[in-house]
Image 1 (cartoon, rainbow, N blue to C red):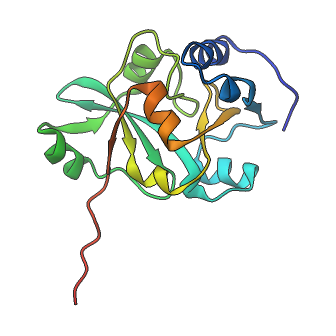
Image 2 (image 1 turned 90 degrees about the vertical axis):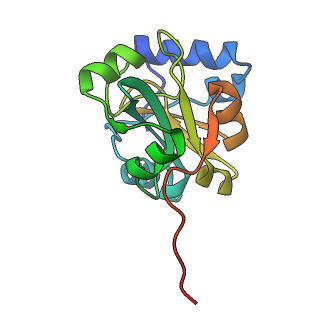
Length: 168
């Protein structure tokens, strides 16, 4: 990891963390030497389980931006999520991601956006004492917890994939 550096999107995330009274997370932003644009890459760089990475993925729900903070251990089931939310969930374009968050794909943070974005927080993240989220740039992350992530984003805790079906 490299020494602390500055970037406007990261500065906005840091300020949002301080405003949300998550100062420990704000001071825990880490910069990597190289981009960590996947959960697997971030987990490897941090030495944590991939499930402890909170991926920030932007979708659309009936055409409106929807931020889903999901565990890096699985994928978002858009059909399942659409059924839960009573609408159609689809992938957002890179242009919509940038417009809604002020950040680019690969570094989207859970907060620090130009305006509030409806946010869902994957309940699978609750299994980890510490989770890591992007901090506004593909080379940055910050530590937090599931409960704090829900609190600072105003997110709705929800499963983002259908429960496994077991046969007896």
